[in-house]
Length: 354
Ligand SMILES: Nc1ncnc2c1ncn2[C@@H]1O[C@H](COP(=O)(O)OP(=O)(O)OP(=O)(O)O)[C@@H](O)[C@H]1O
Image (cartoon, rainbow, N blue to C red; front, side):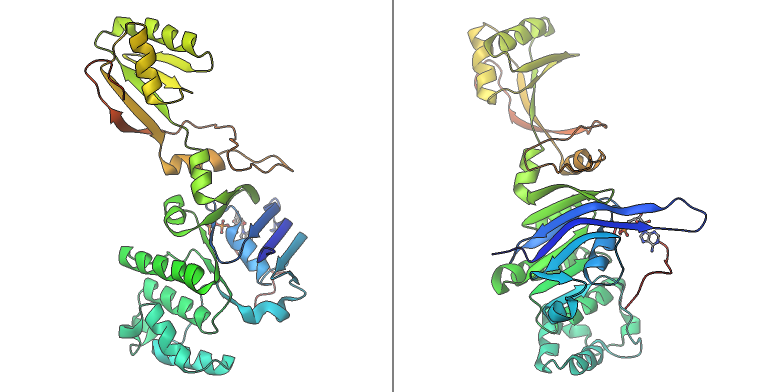
């Protein structure tokens, strides 16, 4: 099945008076497969909103191609727009109308059956607040109302820009359940932008990470995180005098293993498994007192991936690494402790806003 969204080489330069032109999109590529929740992840200002606005025909781009459901956009957008629900701009609602009335009017103008209003109120958790005027809604409730509006016409593709904004933890949980249900049970393709890896990790099946207007990695969320979270082992001994001898024993046993003495411990990288370290040291007559696996935390994976400006024409594939300019702090996960050797923006005039 062809991708639902295909973007290739997208370019957008914002030209601002008295300031250098700014390349918000610098040849961005994006592919989204059907029936998934796809995260569009990147730091603030990396071009996510610009991409989504371009896809929906809200701004003009300077180069590249975009397709939705195989149709080139923006030229063929009118043919596919009925199959897309989106919340990209902050929608404005009549503040004196209730949530229900707002949705009833929108449903009527879009020719959507009235029953859909109650269904989307229920789905977005707004049923109890449906009678209240929108002016009394919190930011999170307005966000839900916007999503409810996007769901009215039962879209096959749902595009949401930072949907967790303004939601409290219970609201985030509810939104996550709703979006996963839509994708996995109803076959809707869901694209959400976010600058939080932890949110994308909990919500999405696949993701594209962008930095400075370019794609730097894409693939399944689990594979990307696993491929960039290489672990090392921290080993301590009853007597620190054993450290150099232990380092030699490990490197002699496997030259590709790294063993570096750091104060009172040995940091081991590239070992096949923790048990191999304990076995090899015991064979050399050296007994350890502590062995700890260190894994990078998720945010450090994100920093690693977005911390380096991507090279023109290069996309990092799942499992490949990019240079790491900043050192990310590891978190320590104990796996075994043995007493001896046991194993273990602004506005832009040219934009045609809709
Ligand atoms: N209308 C505009 N005029 C000038 N510059 C703009 C405009 N819109 C966005 N930019 C700039 O383009 C870059 C990309 O912005 P964009 O809003 O697409 O990023 P983003 O990844 O969505 O960020 P955030 O997570 O903060 O929403 C930023 O440097 C931003 O300042």
